[in-house]
Length: 122
Ligand SMILES: Nc1ncnc2c1ncn2[C@@H]1O[C@H](COP(=O)(O)OP(=O)(O)OP(=O)(O)O)[C@@H](O)[C@H]1O
Image (tube, rainbow, N blue to C red; front, top):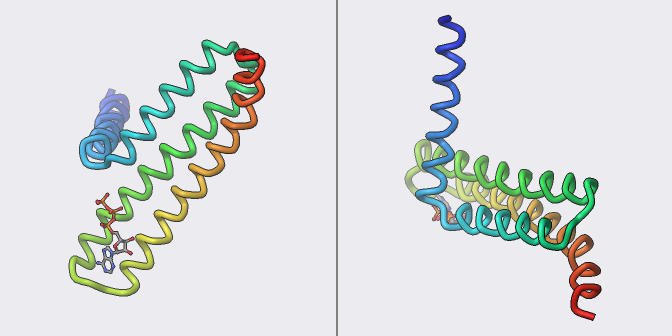
């Protein structure tokens, strides 16, 4: 029973971290909106199971890297509230991870959706 209680509490902490990121990070809200739009487009354009798998994977990758980026920002602000070259470097690297994930998501979306949109329009 205690293990179950601890397990459920763990979910609470995780949701609180996600809620904090939604509240404070405009980028995360944008990525959530983009993921919802892509899911709607996938449903409308009837993408295949393999395509759904790719879309879900890259959307998750972007959201997870954005959460890790926010965690790193909060930690850096805690340990180095004043200007510090290395603190800046750490934030830049974390932001770079988000950028790479977003580029992968855009390329994946383009490969899946552009041919379908062309077929739909033509
Ligand atoms: N303590 C610091 N020392 C040196 N440079 C910093 C520091 N904090 C931020 N920077 C630089 O400013 C950039 C933006 O940092 P900031 O914390 O504002 O990130 P952000 O993504 O704009 O965060 P937020 O989403 O909270 O506005 C960093 O990538 C880094 O180059």
